[in-house]
Length: 221
Image 1 (cartoon, rainbow, N blue to C red):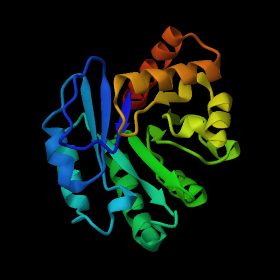
Image 2 (cartoon, rainbow, N blue to C red; image 1 turned 135 degrees about the vertical axis):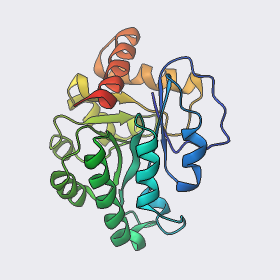
Image 3 (cartoon, rainbow, N blue to C red; image 1 turned 60 degrees about the horizontal axis):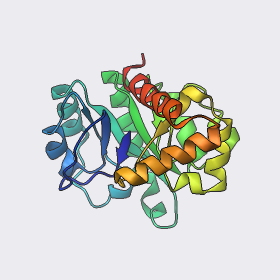
Image 4 (spheres, helix red, strand yellow; image 1 turned 90 degrees about the vertical axis):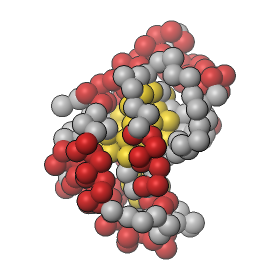
């Protein structure tokens, strides 16, 4: 299970492998100190925070070099009304972090909102080894541009018609389960149940599929 927007004050019982995407520089050290065999951590500069954080690509690079199992993310672009004023700065940091992921050969967790063409262009330029899209709500045609990428589904995007359609159309080996900050066990099980219904799989089979896909995302070369 992937957890985006994790807060460092959260204390979780980890019974299965988890992947925490840490979005703010101020939280990187806290989450990296909590890494275990079952808790994999990603660090990055999220597009929501490019104006509010003390941003440092060299610091990000040092942390990644010191933590060879860490992935890059959550990073990306967000041109929604709330965040479009920082869009040019977002593109700069997204490109720099993609280049860093390529240099260090790390998987990437990506957030794209109303920025699918720019995202595609930058990802085509920077050929990252393994890409996972968090809560993707582009079109089916846009999702098909990434036949080797992984896509995360949470209770919000499977409640959206676009999310449901993408989930129906994707290859089985591209589907991930994500909490998007809501790691309540009952909520996660309900999300997995809904994914299984849409994909016409048993709950057990769907759980095995998303677990295997998550492991392939971080291990894929």
